[in-house]
Length: 318
Image (cartoon, rainbow, N blue to C red; front, side, top):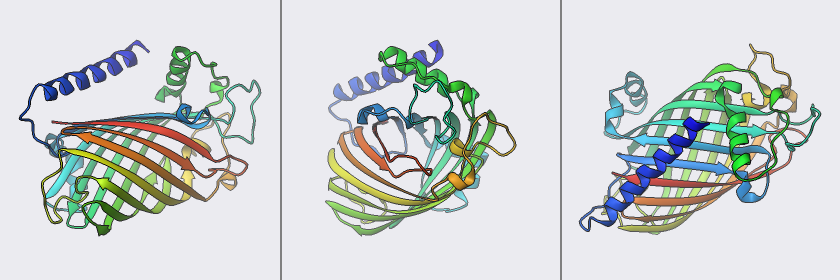
């Protein structure tokens, strides 16, 4: 865990140095997201629970240099526009049963599971539309270090040590291809309504989703090529996002077919339709952006409970 601690310390040091540099430069201009650093941390501790999707973190870098990757060039061909943002990211998600204190295995509950991915992503924008395509390559199981991450956080927050990680979903290589399409239905200076649709296909998730995103407040344009205007030096806006997802496969619940896990749920235990609602607040000053989002989700498996978590996101633009 010393390695993880050093990485986290480095990330926060980097953010501090960038913020200090911004404060000392009165001529700094607002920049777009094409060169930026994003860090997201989710935890259901924000909602006073400790179950299901219990924590996750994403470190993302955006820079035109990533366009040189053969995978990026392939993804760009899906929607070959001129306004493109290239990204790479690292993501870890941790899932647990309803109770982390059970000494006996509950065969009706979801299993412990951890996933870790490296992703290459391309965001292509044209007028009222935006297509995000990405490929995830990583793993599921003990090698994803979900157990170590949860126990590390619980130890340093004086929470109970989870029991039962020896029953987690077995190790497997994992890969996914993802598409997410956004189209502006109503776009104005203070209010946006955006339609969304997409899906995922691969080892860990196969599903399809549709939803609606509302943004209200002082904000920069979501689609940069539509009636271009200068970005505001500060932002303060709220977001409301609802999605419905049809789930065909979820490896965090079902495991991977070619591996044998101590405990997974069979496909008949899945809730095929899952609904999610996110409410967020974003505040930006020049090239620094902060966001907090509360997420609610309906049960993902039969007999399961609704769930909620909070997420913090920081963006530093260069």
